[in-house]
Length: 201
Image 1: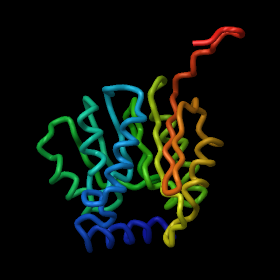
Image 2 (image 1 turned 90 degrees about the vertical axis):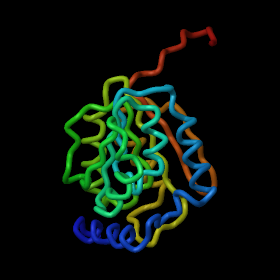
Image 3 (image 1 turned 45 degrees about the horizontal axis):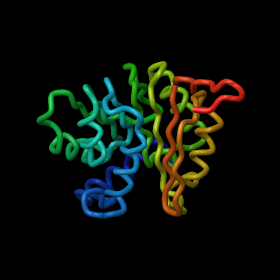
């Protein structure tokens, strides 16, 4: 699927439904958000970034833990709904942008890569991960969450996305949660503290 057709695909989804994935109505989505948030190591972050923010359901929870928050989505309809949800907050900004064409210019200490890796072809995924890693602050956190079942409109499975993340991200793996339906993993730009031989924590 080309970048232009991918944009059109997501715009059709969001224009045709106020919440195409049931983010505000399904227990599965609510639980997945709660687990994603629970895996974050810090209570607060200076600047969070969520490319592929859709209608802003996860963004709303992330914004409560960030001094500044930026969300991107390729769908104008999704961005409009996210702004309607959180537009009253001065520290939150939503923009219609696509990866990897648009590159983040700011630095973030939290990047949330949720449910978008399967929609990028091999070249686009590689370029996206490179740009996101450059945008991550030296001690920042990078968390990813993806559905593990087959997708009719995706290039790869959620597991394959996370295999790419492990291979291409030059970050320290911190924690992982793998369930039958989804996989959530956290990396950090801050190297894990070494434990001297013969000692334990």
